[in-house]
Length: 538
Image (cartoon, rainbow, N blue to C red; front, side, top):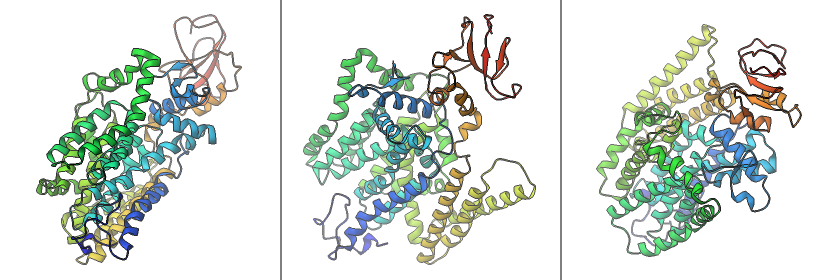
């Protein structure tokens, strides 16, 4: 890998839109700068896409998004512009930007789990090459390419980024759109028409979670003013406004179609999460911090030094933007009164940027020394713990291959990263990345990567029985509604009330008077389908 330190700093006009660094006479550097984002994106696909469909869609978000996508895509021409749920009820929670893509995948490949998760995974994976491009726009001279590479690798191998990126959820795509917005705006300082790319990123946010655009525009505006903006900012702003047109037109048209109901995605499902708790999803500012501390390994150890580095260079564009993006993202996430684990997703790009600076310094200078040593201890602890559990024949549902791969990568890679020669440190980082990536792949294969399902019953067996019932059969659910059951049963289930019909089918976990189960083992702890034929209330 070439370093930017080998370039001629006097050459300033031989650049392309994908880099802020100059081009060598032989053109070889230009080829490398174009290939690196593409190579990292392909590696991300190899790491994120395997075994997308080995687990059922989970409640709530995945199954709800899948159901809305299937119903919306089934509408007649042009009616698909309005999102619907269960083929008839209007859906007002979120714009249907990602739902259109998922619906197209379902129509093309069928309603398989992997087909539902495919488009969200592809869109989320674009965050990796985009953060490389973003870091290149923050050119800090010597070492820019190394920092960009490290930031991309860190974002690619973060467990929360990979795991949530694989799910049929909006958060991974939101991260990609936000990075397109930021990188396009930074690039527009030199090429004003790149403001159009920033605007397209803003349109993407408008078609995913529109209130988030207000926060990102505030972040960009404040940091741009502090960063002594370019004299061509008015031209770039015009291009950016033109890129926002698609998203703005959809919202104006949506308001014309649904009136004040169209404001739900801005109010109760948007800004309302700042001022009040939606459902039972109460939380505090500590929840996102806990998610970062739990999911940031092994790279989270690099963050303190990265923050110190950015503060030292706070008077440069690089330090200012990296600190500003971290603070701005935190101000968007931490004050929310409604907190869900994946809201911390917006924090990972600025964290990856800051950790990338530390990792680049570790590769070049071998400091800070303590980080590879801690990785060695963590790797050894993982290996020893795994051997102890296996020796004791414990029945714990642990992904042992994943633990072994990650442990070996950290142990061996940490040892080589502690060496004095730069080549050995580069080899050590390659070992850490390889071991951690193999660990992620083993986790996907283990059926344990979607651990929310450990708390929710698998709806597929009961749904298969429901699909055998006549179309006019009344099927009710005892308890909270489950979008995943509606999805697999391919029909909406009615909520059990105090006045059920004389004959109906009931999905319940407990036996009811005058009801018989359709399974061979009625006395289990699993949910079952019961046939209730008496007029007596259950």
